Length: 360
Image (tube, helix red, strand yellow):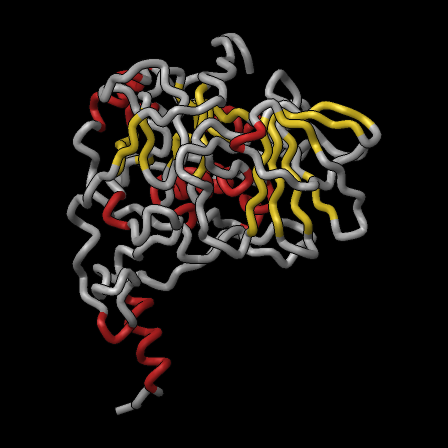
């Protein structure tokens, strides 16, 4: 009988249980992780229970008559992002919603690529510090710049924004970690949740969201932070290999509701390499093939995005996931506290854009 070393044996157990966590792919030309592997953005939620309000939320988003819509492609569609280093000049910005914005300074300038349309998001990663800078409604030139709001995220940290604060997104979450990227599709794996929008949202938010921009106080509407998963029973085998990469991510990592917008529009990077055939295939996926997921049992600390691993089982009682020698198939199958924050006084704006049905 071959005896494995203790560490190897432990890894074998974890692998068989599907518990080895893999972080999201590094942004091109950087060595920066996109949040730690235990971050909720990087959590596999394929085994989580369906949320009790799933049917209501799907109905409010017209899931029975709507297909997915990839809100990205070749320019001008999708989110451009910028990679800079410490040599890039930084500027201080004037914010419309300064009380909920990180003061900076921010590495913006004439070379900064900005999202097309009215939202004018700018996403910037400093490869030397591994900090993500995100801005909403960015405008300016020279040393004079303004924005609606700004948020800075250290990519090595699980710390969430202060409760009730917005970001460059209505949910108070980062945008970049939820983007579908062409380099990930080419590599054959997406291991993070995907950002998407809904036309009407509740005036509440669920962890890990920090902010709401709801149209009504109505629990039949999905709150910011709600997570949705493509059903495992949905057959993706007839799609192209590249489209399957995205759909498989939706089955394992799902979608996170992050802003108001057109129903079932999900986000990706602006890239001329996106094939039209892939985008066309994605538009055939029925939204009715999704369920809302109850993921509150993954929360360790309400102010942290660190998540328990489902396969690793419940907490060991100290607020941390169990160590490998305490592995037990328990803890994540049942619903947790479902902690929900209701409307918190905020100076930030209510719903933003809604793309008309005839838009791309």
